[in-house]
Image (tube, rainbow, N blue to C red; front, side):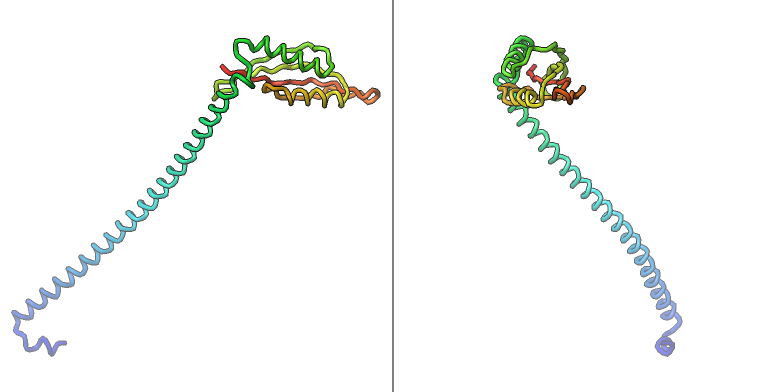
Amino acid sequence: MNALFDHLNRREKRTLERLTAAVLLSAAVFFVLAISQKSRYIEARDELAMRQENSRRAKKSQTEAKADWLRWQEALRDLESFRGTYFYDEKTIFQTLRRDLQQIFGRAGMDIPMITYQYSDLGKVSMKKVLVTFNYSGTYADLKQFLAIVERFPRFLAVEKVDFQKTDASNGLLHLRLTLAGYYAT
């Protein structure tokens, strides 16, 4: 390589050295800029991936919320269609429920027991329920008959709770505390 430079004069050598230094400096600057740009590219790529994942999660959450909203809308339509048929009317709940309980106890061949009533709100929907609690004493067969009558009753009456107080093995009697729930629209 020195032989190549031997025939050049001093001025040409200096120009060539400057040109070589400029090229090396340019290459170094390019290399530093390339590394810097690569670093920014990686950061931008990672941020884009994170934003895409956040977007995917937000879309999934939005889809789930929309599906939940649609289910509530369907439930509200169902509740509205049941309002007059299966639910009690808020204005006449006490009289109608009392009359229905008399029918149920009569069909089951039971005397009307002492009943306590408790009212509660159901929260998200414009429905309330009344809990009817009473003591029951009878055989298992009579209890099954009573529960079948409640189950077939045309209004929404559900067995909310059964507390076994005691069982009498000598005569086969059960002593229970039953709670039924009746629903009404507000």
